[in-house]
Length: 260
Ligand code: PGA
Image (tube, rainbow, N blue to C red; front, side, top):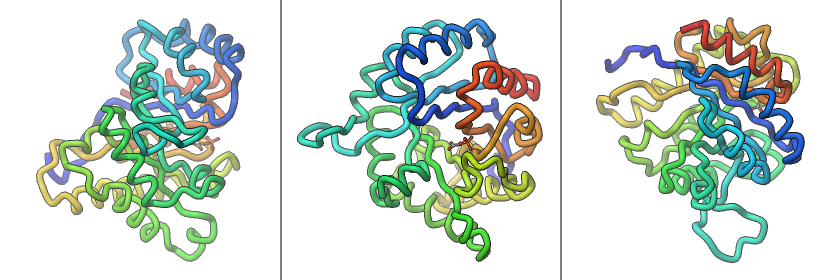
């Protein structure tokens, strides 16, 4: 399989960001669950605020929806006021965690080194890490996308063993496209995702059983998701705003499912 693009089941990951109290989350999930078929080929993930995790796990028990978090700290425990460890997430039954989201990089000053430590902490607890990478508007203008993506991907993987790559998903999220209604040109997104797969292969210089999974994120909605998911190197999508609307999110899931 080395060198080939492997077609895999599509991944649809919602990122609620700082939205929905537990009460609101409950209303949303009670509507979503009946709209999502029990046996789906796609991987459906909802990354919810920490305080909604328990409720979300409970509401989605026995369904096809997996619950993820949006961040974790890299230390195991101790005097880190306000932080949440990977072990705490694991103990609640969380399976995924978004790391290195551009909002974390921008507003909370997370750098590549911190993100790499968080990836290791998540993997140590058997969580799957959804690692976000992507360029700013200015970097895009200066044609630095590949350079930025290369340095973010390779820094995130520093010291990670090849056998752990199956638990890492990269999300290409150009910063200028997040929450702006401006999606990347899909052909460019396809190429960047192909480039991420190539970076990982080159870094590991070995026969990986399959390519690393790559998502596109940034203003994805029910209208454009089909086009995005039909690109062969894009294995799914990380969805912010449109994951807050239950009808739209379930429509996106159904579209992903129909593509298979
Ligand atoms: P958006 O956010 O879909 O609202 O653009 C995507 C993300 O930040 O993951």
